[in-house]
Image (cartoon, rainbow, N blue to C red):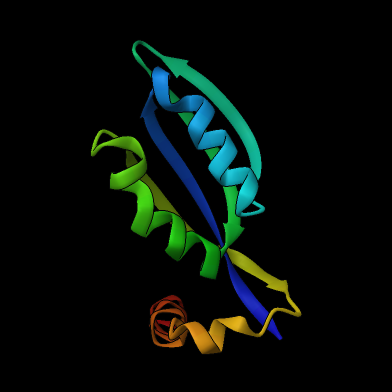
Length: 102
């Protein structure tokens, strides 16, 4: 079974960078680059789509509405985790795949 891989850029205030790194680590994201821009930090990372959906849903709560996110499809990765089906996220993944094929 394969799952879409999402590349993302997270823009957050410097004060939340530790929390962002911790949460991305818990979700097994691969942090590729970090940069500081004035009063914010930009984190570039890749993660499995099912975990990205969770991260995206928690973003406002974790960072008090101050973070924003850019993301795009980055390929596929093999997975043995079938919990995706039980979480009800298949329709969102299917929509992403259909969008990529067009």
